[in-house]
Each structure stands twice: as structure tokens, then as C-alpha cells.
Length: 237
Image (cartoon, rainbow, N blue to C red; front, side):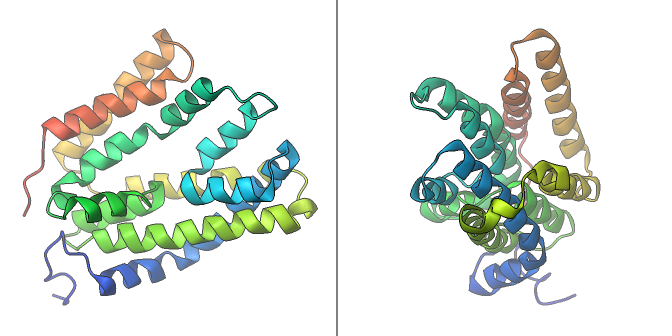
């Protein structure tokens, strides 16, 4: 058994964070391309360079930022904009619930600091590490920092050098992280608790898609899965 596998699953220190950062460097190259697409789209929408970079630094959510561009204009509809961003990011409720057994041992400041850089990719890899009996919080924090920096670099490149790409979607840049997440979920932990939580979230999302207003399925699915995950806590090893 390696030294890393002998450590508590909830361990988090500089060495684990740096290891997570290094593991995510190859993935970050694709995030740079996705960020480049956002920077280009933001410029075409009329956002200033400063606003685009600040949005990427503070929001750090590609799908939400692209959705915000669709609502951007002379008169910004703040309430619809906030609701749209919340709906798209509601899946983080489920992500937080699945991570709680390991995050709960951290001081509040560190716990919520780690979650500031949580995204689909580093969440999926950290859950995969936990399922294999390895510490995963270093992947969550270090990987998140790598992705965040790559997103900022990509946004900057898109603002200043992205004019060569007329249609980023035609290159499939909007699908890179979705495909990565699907691969991680398929290869991740598959105990009864996780499968039931995902099943409940999927069924609730489908019902909302069929019977509730447009885009509400994202919120409903995340709330259903997140609530079940919060109530049905996994025992720490």
C-alpha cells in the first residue's frame, strides 16, 4: 500500500494539493480552449475585457457564463440572470452533499474555500479517488485551482487572440468537459447509496422536464438528489 493510500481519506495538505494540481494539468489544456471560446463570445457580446476576466475569476462556471451572455444587453435583467445561473449550477447541491462525509472534518473556512473551485471534473475525480480508498480532497482543491487558472488564461486568450475562431461550437469545445464528466461517472464509485441518489435525481429531473416550466428540471433534479444525499449520509471509513 502506498503512502498516499495509508492517509485518511479526508486528508488535505500542500503535498496532496500539488499532486492534484499536477494531475489536472493535461485536462486544463482543454479548459483553456473552452475559456478561449468564452472570451471570444464575451467580446462579441460587447463585454469589456475587464468584465469578462472578472466574471471568469469570480463565477468560474462555463455553462452559466455562456448563458449569462444570452441575457446581456443595455438593460440587464438581474432577476432572470440570477435565476438562470442558479438553475444551471444547482447540480452543485448534489456535488456538495456527496462530498460532505469528507469535507465535514475540515474547519468551515477551509471547507468552503475548497468548494469555491469545485467543478464537474475535479469533483468526479475526487469521488473516484474516494471510491478507490484514496484521499480525494487534494484532487478537489489542487485540480480546481489548475482548472480555474486555465479558465482565466483561456478567457484572456479569447479576448485578445480569439478572432481566428469564428464558430467555437463547431470544434466541439462546448462538449469537452461534459464528455470528461461522463467518463468519470461511468468509472466512478457504484455502491447502492450512490446509484440510488443518482436514480432519484434522474427521475425527478425527467418528471420536471416533462411537467414543469423550461429549465426547472436542472434545479429539481439537483435538489432531489442533494436532499437524499444530505439525509442519507455515508459512514466515514
